[in-house]
Image (cartoon, rainbow, N blue to C red; front, top):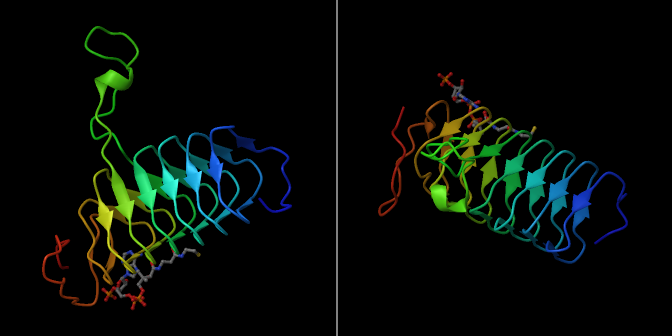
Length: 173
Ligand SMILES: CC(C)(COP(=O)(O)OP(=O)(O)OC[C@H]1O[C@@H](n2cnc3c(N)ncnc32)[C@H](O)[C@@H]1OP(=O)(O)O)[C@@H](O)C(=O)NCCC(=O)NCCS
């Protein structure tokens, strides 16, 4: 890791940090993996079993949950929220606090070179294709094709783009 200030950071011993990772203040990381030269802004939380590639930029106030894979060269804007539990609840049917056995983690992948705008929410089980762009403030409910630009709630293709063959398209606006 670089010589970035280490005050007010919680980086658990089980975090795997690559070379020259830069981490700013008030960051909380546990059980995750961060690739070489990636930058992580202030107030970011990254949970266990999340993987961030090399040369990514994760902007401040973003939450990356368990089950998320971010490939290399990805930009994640400010206050981006990933979701991995479609039907969240505090307790199980017995009224006891929910445990690992009481829910299914829905994995999400953001492929190489994609950019996720600020304030985006991504539902679980989503794939954002290579070099795709998700507009600021969008809610992503379906896979985003490679090289596409999507925006809105729910996110839809912008500029009359045509999705590539073999990719699950978001609806055109
Ligand atoms: C999605 C984005 C890349 C589109 O840029 P663009 O291709 O130049 O698109 P335009 O600005 O020409 O807008 C095209 C249309 O999409 C709409 N649009 C653009 N961005 C939008 C957004 N985030 N949400 C909803 N609609 C959006 C525009 O209003 C316009 O609609 P219209 O044709 O009805 O007038 C850009 O607007 C964006 O949101 N970028 C992310 C910025 C960001 O979060 N940066 C993070 C760090 S600062």
